[in-house]
Structures are given as structure tokens and as C-alpha cells.
Length: 258
Ligand code: HXC
Image (cartoon, rainbow, N blue to C red; front, side, top):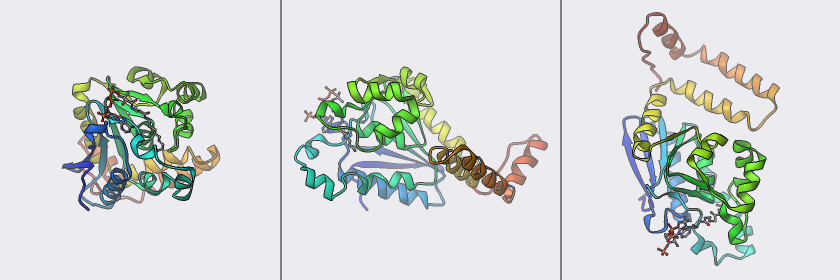
């Protein structure tokens, strides 16, 4: 598939996928989401890739779904096509880690897309928001569900009802982003995080991601059991032997499965 709305670059075992519709602040349309889904699923099964980074431009990660396209939709259009599940859910099926590196606006579907990633590293310039209410609609790709889980009901309500934006510092205090870095350091810091993940044992990385995600889907007892079973499974890997032996020998681990 030829990509026109995203850019793809591989650095070592890390793939950087850049949303690229600069004229409209990376507004998300079907073509872009098809390309993104295709790329994510392709890299997920590519043995040469261990971690994926999703980013945008300095001005915008993504300013939301494309309003120009949505403006003409009727209820029947969106209901019959189940607008937006068709090509927005791919990212949920990706087993390898996906880091969002966000600078500038992450609004509406852009904020939702960032939240679908495993964690968000934000530049000081990042601005998060769910401004759909100003358009007479509500968030449709998880905003009302992932925001309260990430930042509390109070802040999620505030954002979804007033449409106010949250800057990077507030987003970090609230728990929406894992770290805030100077804008000029965003790619460097996100790459360092991705490289460090790519150097770990891939099976352990996949299991850790699966287990953390489980916390959002189940009870504590079931989640703990799930975690324990995966934890036990790690002892069947060569990488567990290597990781622990390397510690005892006071040398860096060299994992086979990366
Ligand atoms: C289509 C968009 C767009 C969008 C920006 N543009 N956001 N086009 N859809 N979501 C276009 C503008 O029309 C403009 O095109 C160009 O990008 C630059 O934007 P400006 O508004 O001139 O820039 P600025 O003044 O800096 O303001 C930036 C902004 C503003 C605050 C981000 O663009 C804005 O409010 N955008 C809409 C944000 C929004 O409401 N997002 C939620 C969408 S609904 P021209 O041709 O004039 O240069 C949504 C629902 C998701 O996401 C549902 C499930 C997926």
C-alpha cells in the first residue's frame, strides 16, 4: 500500500509513523486511518520491529477527525457505516508497544488516538482537548471512556462539557501523559524511550502490555491471576535466564528475543 497521509521511517528496531496532512493540522480522514491501520498491523508482525512511535508535526499531533468530511454526514451515513469503528480500532489490535509523541494540538479524535497508544510523551507545547461539544457532537472514539479512566471523572467531564484544552503540564499532573519534555527534545526523548523498550525481551514487553491493559477490562482478582500466569510464563523464556544471569554477572543483558 502506498502511503500519502503518513510518513514511515525505521530507525533500528523502532518505526516512527508520522501523521502527515499538514494543510489541515493532521485532521484524520478515512484514507489516513486506513493507511495508519495498515502500517501498524504490518509492523506488528514484522520481526525487524520491536516498538512503534506515533507522532505528528510541531503544530499538531492531530486536530481531530476531518470536520470538512463529517459536516455532510447524516445519521444514516454514520449509523450504517458504524462511523468510526471500521478503521479506528486497528491500533487496539497491535501487540507491540505504541508510544505517542505529541506536540501541539491533540484534539477530538486526535486526543482519542493519542489515548489509544500505550503511553504519551508530550512536548511542552502539547494541548489536549475534546472540543466536539462545540460542534454539536460528542467524542466518538473513546474520549468519554478513556479520559475518565486516565484523568478522573471531574477533569474528563470538564473537558468534554466545556471543551477547554489542557496544556502539557496539567496533562502530566492529571496522569494523561507519562512525561513532558522540551519541544525541541520530543523526538530525542521519545526515541530514547522506544530504543530502551526495543532492547528489552520482546515477549516480556508484550506480556507487560497485555497485563497492564487487562487492568482496564477486569476485576482485581482476575487481573492479578492473569498477571501471575503471564509472570510464571516468563520463566520459560531464554530471556529470563539471560536477564537474571546478566544481573548476577554485573553486565548488561543481551536478550535473544527482541
Ligand atoms: C478539518 C481542520 C481541522 C479539522 C484544523 N483544520 N482542524 N480541518 N478538520 N479537525 C484546518 C483548518 O480549517 C485550517 O484550514 C487549517 O487546518 C489550519 O487551522 P486553523 O484553524 O487556521 O489554525 P489555528 O487558528 O492555529 O487553530 C488551530 C485549532 C483549530 C485550534 C486546532 O484549527 C481548531 O479548532 N480545529 C478544530 C478542532 C476540533 O474541533 N477538533 C474536533 C473535531 S471532531 P484552512 O483551509 O482554513 O487553512 C472529532 C470527532 C472525533 O474529532 C469523532 C470520532 C473519531
